[in-house]
Picture 1 (spheres, rainbow, N blue to C red):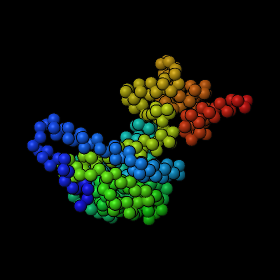
Picture 2: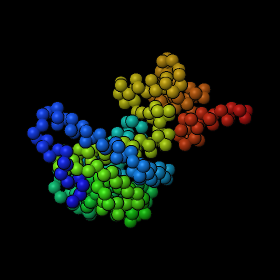
Picture 3: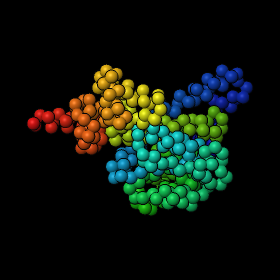
Picture 4: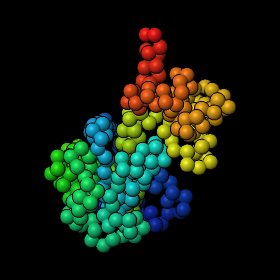
Length: 303
């Protein structure tokens, strides 16, 4: 029997506990998840996936997540949040959930049991050899995800998997498997709990690290945030101030001059250039602020 389906000995009488005792027990079990992810072997597995994703992005590829049920919903959440947070195109990270959009809100019977559907969903998105597919399943055996993995490998793409059971079947179909063995759930078989928490944490780590390395963060500031509402406009201007140590008026003026693009505004201030020149520096520096500033200094010193 899979470890996620076994009965948890710590919670066999959870229905007899007080509200606070139930909450305490759930919390205690949840605290084991980051410790498991922090194990050296698991971190190395995650590192391998991030390295492959960065290689795919450098080739102009796209990152696809595939999952069913909770795994699919978490995949959709992670992919969707890369857009406003890091200003990437909606196609850079794409999530496929067995059963389609309807499955976000209610179960679509039989969808996760179809290997062919896992393939068809990738074909419909024009998945190619430069793309990367990460198959996600707490059980480690979901046919929909295996179908996606096998199709991705058949077209020459690299693949990863994320499961919460040891020696998962998924791992045999992926180039870079991740196994975060979270063990029995507080409520037997309810993998939306510890297993879901593990998947959320690992997906956060993967997408965040890949996009930090792609130049979407300067220091620890999200310099490509999309200022699509009042809160984010204010955040963008504060990011400019923190990154350059300028005053609010300068941040506002440069933010407007950069057509509300924080990263460009930061380079404009740090290198004392105009919008066009700042954009050129970024283009020549792999879209990374630190390298753009260094390049500007080098050019200035040779004059």
